[in-house]
Length: 497
Image 1 (cartoon, one colour):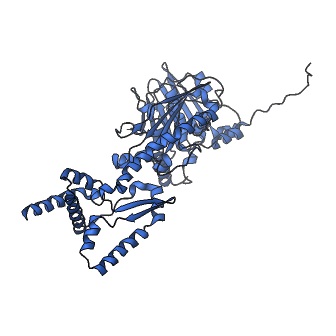
Image 2 (cartoon, helix red, strand yellow; image 1 turned 180 degrees about the horizontal axis):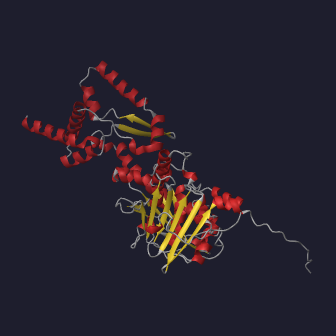
Image 3 (tube, one colour; image 1 turned 90 degrees about the horizontal axis):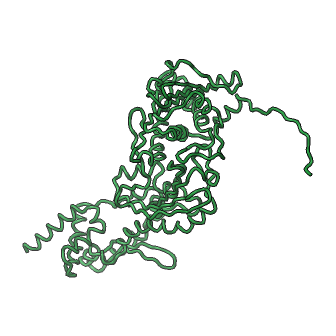
């Protein structure tokens, strides 16, 4: 029989002023805070979401408006309550919420005054959290204004929908409280940095048949697909499905095109500010909303050869606890059962990226293509050595006296032995696509073209094969128009002789 232990109870209600200030420091950035508010708009069925900023005013503000289902006053008050939803409770499939803290903690992280105006069935409701008011009264009480005419941006609200307004945006001022120009510059820079985040996080909603439109100060943001699925050179593996107790995990790997198969603007856009090296890896989506990206979850290292590999992982909101999704919906942990599956998949998804680079690199070492360099691999080491048998070298050497010929080949050997390995490694680990062959002048190119053409014609290669061989190696590849012109001129001169 269980022994009954008597006890007393004491009120441990948190001090409103202290706790609400603590909610400001959960760790939101501006982009994750705005994303959290947009989550609510999408959950409410919004098709049009507008972000409006006023940064030069004496009291700057940021507003997010949507045309979602809106809320009654009772629902609005509930939505303004911190912890309005139990994270353990079941949610509808399209619900992007998590703890019922998002809108409040996200907003408090950026401002001291949060106003929400919502309209449904012709009725308009408004509620305000003002942290200075909470500090003064130490009460968990929102203000309910009867007149919304003085609320900034409220006139932009449609017949149905919700406005989330941030005022007293002290966390975005950059310390320039009394310098309106400097303060506006800081806020605008932060807003600009947020733009790419929104294009990436919500790209699947923006790509729907009935797309969600997200605009910033009247300019519609285009979706940013991290897998470049519209590029015909992108390689998409078949989708896999892992059925678990709380739902299905969907996995699909992609190999991005080589940078020469994409426009420079698209290549840099899809790479982001940290580049492709940091953008490779898993892209975790919860309810089609991007949670985390650019990580291999410790299963392998980020490398130059695998930087084209990206893997989409889709999970339902019923698996939040398994993945340890945080309040900000910006971090997660890989469950052991999924880790085991991804270990088996990861080699395959890396191979596609490696093949893309190695296929191009193979042309460098193919002896049929008259490379300027030989790749020599032995005893676990790789060396690159100038190919002294290349026609450009061999033809010139033949014109030299024996004593000068020896000095010429010594110079070529010194060039090979002085290859700046460390510098090349550092550059390749950063932005390999920025490394390009050096340009050669007309005389140098003409000498190389004529020597190579002579050797290939002597080997009885037809012109179609000669053109194909030369087009695949530098310096001809990077100066192909000039190379074709020199070939044509050389052939004309041969015919006239």
